[in-house]
Length: 110
Image 1 (tube, rainbow, N blue to C red):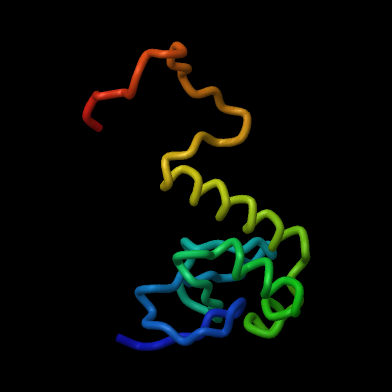
Image 2 (tube, rainbow, N blue to C red):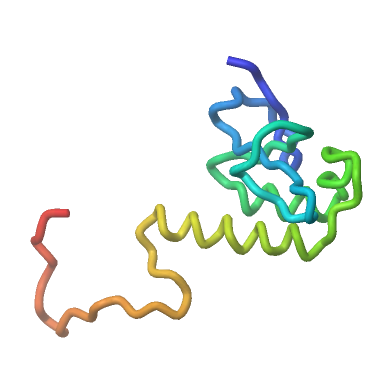
């Protein structure tokens, strides 16, 4: 598979281990677009790599156009929320069911 470079940590990896981002015509960043210039982030830690790339101006370099800081910050929030959902963690502000104290371990199967 083709190898690409993460714009945050600068590691070279196979494309299937990275997330491809595109800058849409309205300036927003998306991982669902196709075509045009792309930027790549590590799939295992995309929010961390996005934060690193933001601090170094690498989004603008990758897209060869200015990228607003707020667009990258929105992307980071979305990546962090996605990571929490995939890890089974509750989203901020959500309520998880409480188990009574002393109830013992939950033996239900997932």
